[in-house]
Amino acid sequence: MGQGSAEFTLDVLHQKRQRVRVSIGAVVIAGWTGRDPAAVEHHIAELEALGVKRPSSVPMFYPVASARLTSSDTIQALGEESSGEVEFVLLQHQRQLWVSVGSDHTDRRVETYDVNVSKQMCDKPVAQTWWALDDVRGHWDQLVLRSYIGVGTERTLYQEGSVTSMLEPADLIARYRDAGGALMQGTVMFCGTLAARGGVRPSPHFLFEIEDPVAGRRIRHEYSVSCLPVPK
Figure 1 (cartoon, one colour):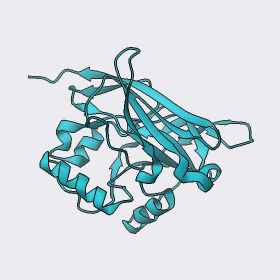
Figure 2 (figure 1 turned 120 degrees about the horizontal axis):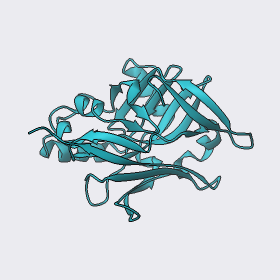
Figure 3 (figure 1 turned 120 degrees about the vertical axis):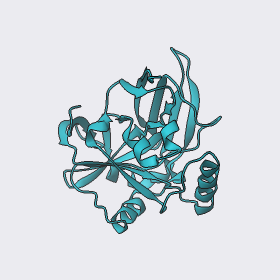
C-alpha cells in the first residue's frame, strides 16, 4: 500500500471478486461511538482517572494522515506502550459504501496527554477485503468483531462482541456530517472499538476479524509490532 493509495479486494455477494486500486483521500478515526450513552460516559470517566482528557464532543472524529493506512503484516511503533483495537471500517468508493475490519493501533502513553497526537503516531492496519455494505445492511446487528493477542503460535482472545456496541454506519456518518465532515470518495473511517478482556495492554502480535454469521464468511488480518527503542 503506497502513500495515498491502496489495493483492495471488493467482495459483492454472488459476484466475482474485484481487485482495485483506491485513492485514499482521507482517514478518520471515530471515537466514543458507543450506542449506550451511559456506557460511553462510564468509559470516559475511567480514562479520565488514568489521565486521558475528556473529549470535547461525543462522538469525536480524529483526522489521520492517509499514509498511516496499511495492510502490511508488520508495523513499527516507538517504545512498547502501543496496542491495537479491532474496529469495523467504512470506505466510500465508486459511489457506494464498503465495510471491512481494521485496528486503530494507538500509543497509550501519548494518549494520556494528547489523544490527537497519539492517533497520528501509529500506522492503522486494515484488511484488504471489503464487503459491500448493502450485502450486510439487512442483518448488520449480527456481525461480530474479534481480536486476539499473543506471541508465536499462542493466541488469547482480547476483544469480542457485536457491532451493536457502536453506532450503526448511517447514524455515525450523519453525526460526522453534523460535525462538519463528509464521507467523500476515497474516505476511510474507523468506527469505534470494544472493551478489552483483561484491560488494554500491548502485544507483539495482533489478529483481528469481522464475522458475518448469516453469510458464513469473515474478513481477517494480522500484524506484528516492531518496537523501536526510545532514546534515553
